[in-house]
Image (cartoon, rainbow, N blue to C red):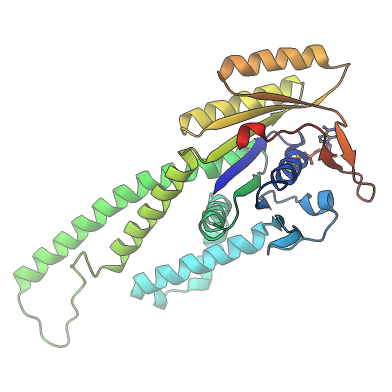
Length: 308
Ligand SMILES: Nc1ncnc2c1ncn2[C@@H]1O[C@H](COP(=O)(O)OP(=O)(O)OP(=O)(O)O)[C@@H](O)[C@H]1O
Ligand SMILES: [Mg+2]
């Protein structure tokens, strides 16, 4: 199963082109397109009301819009359940209070999004392609960076936890046998829930990172023939390089006779930043508009030949 992330600055045409590419791929493969953007318009493009459950469009194309608010709530609930079962003493604290503080913590939305991507990739193996229409650059780079950051953190936490368990064991040996009324804190690595959870997290994020950096992940960068879009694309390219994530396709969207000189300039700059990445050009109104929703429906050019 292959995954395609369509990224770029706000308004460049990510949703339109993800929909077009998903449609084109679905002529030959089974495709699921997932909108990760909090301001969805996937439903408008296909003229359907979408929920966060996948909806059939054709036999080979399914659509889904992620409900970020609901997802974040579910994510927090799950984490707090795990937390309270791992740390029994937390049950005496006010977890609701804890919940409302965590809700506003930085990074929660990104973690919720990443968890949902990980789950989708793990569960939707029947599809040949999953196309992710991503939110604008900043949020996208932040959630793509999370697996690497998390692995670094979790490795450090595993070491700290192992040291704690060793100290507990030493104390246990010094104290000898205990009377019935005394409790023994866990010192065994195999039965320690916190350590087990940390190992699970490590494995999950290692696998996800491997998948994201591997040959079956395609990141496509959409831009327009203008300087702002070029500057933001340059930031994205740098970010992807740092994270060792594979940029596989550039699309210069909304090219016209009037902006062709700018379009060429932007393309020269882009291709000097990334060597040997295929580049496609899509003209402004280079396809068929959906009469009901006035959104671009089918792009005339096949943009998916480099993704097969
Ligand atoms: N090649 C094109 N020709 C004409 N209109 C286009 C083209 N590509 C995109 N558009 C239009 O540009 C607008 C923005 O496109 P779209 O919603 O796909 O961008 P986006 O990058 O997903 O935006 P956002 O960052 O807000 O999610 C829409 O009205 C869309 O119909
Ligand atoms: Mg969009």
